[in-house]
Image (cartoon, rainbow over all chains, first blue to last red; front, top):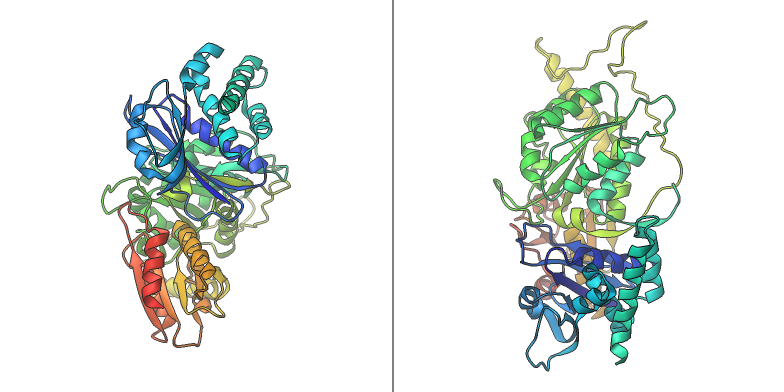
Length: 178
Length: 356
């Protein structure tokens, strides 16, 4: 098994954190994993991205030329990365901030992650709603392991942060069940 | 420290490895793609080391690369386990200091997380400082030991080995990585146990009360002295060449084509090899871990029909060391990209298929 995921959005949407949480959850499960960020200069309103590779075997290049899954949180990122998705690959799209034309060559999970996050009460957790959606769509990492990672990295004593992230993750996970 | 896995970037793994090795002095100046080393050292060097009797650890963000390497020179002369880090253009600036450290026979660790060159270049991963690293880099007849990790785990492990080798041979040791290795995060298993440093440095300038003063210098004006000193250096290098070759070799016994690559390039080469072997093609891999001394002993294959394919993120630098090691016994081919271009698995596979 090898799963190559590109995660992209605008600066501030938490795409780096999304990738790191995903990578740590994969590590908790004993899988091989690499996380590789865009580390160059980026512009406000532009795109930021990271690449996560999860496998049960040794991973070669952490740089992804053809992705199995794209997690896209805004329109400029969709334009920049849609060409990197393999045929019949999975697109997880934040429909609050990005729209895609009718499609045939990919499997699309399009949900308003930003709106969901605002309903929960914190716009910043849109990334975790997208991660929940990924977890249920691809069944590569378990939600309970993502929750373990939340607990290990959340600032001690700040239960509210933990709560909103957990709620976003669970809401994201439920989306695929209609 | 508990024997657990944590997610670290290659840069952070190098920094944590240095701390685990008892690094007590770090000076650096920021440059992408190695800034996480400085950031990590700034955060962690301020915490007491826990080594009995050791003075507080020192972290300095120097005013320039030149200042940083010369601070390391001074700290190493005083007996500290000292380190600096930078990326290609910054390492060029440090070369004068590295030559002086080699000339004063001092142990120090220098990290180069390579980016594209020449000149200011760009911040993309590259391996184009191979010549500079393996041929000394600065002026004079000297070498530094060069170690090239290919994963965050190996970055952590080799940094600790680098400090031991530096002390053992009184020589600067360079960790040579690239932007991908530095930036990529991977699970790293941390060493158990407390920091231990066993080196005895009776040559160090640690105060001479009750003994003859030590002298640390790289200046030999009297006729014959410098030649004699150079011969001593050469003798040291011969011992290192014999004892410190490091390498990973895979499937050499049946290989028709042997890929040769180091660092990040070797990871991509390994994927290409696995793909080709799953198609029944007889492919092997040599991954030099020490670039100086170059692992010549791993190239003693007798079958004259074997072909080597050297893969680099540069234009034929390690190629020359492979040619010297093979010494005309077999065919040596080359494939490389640089300036930020990364050889893909497919490009390697296509080239190999033409050689089979």
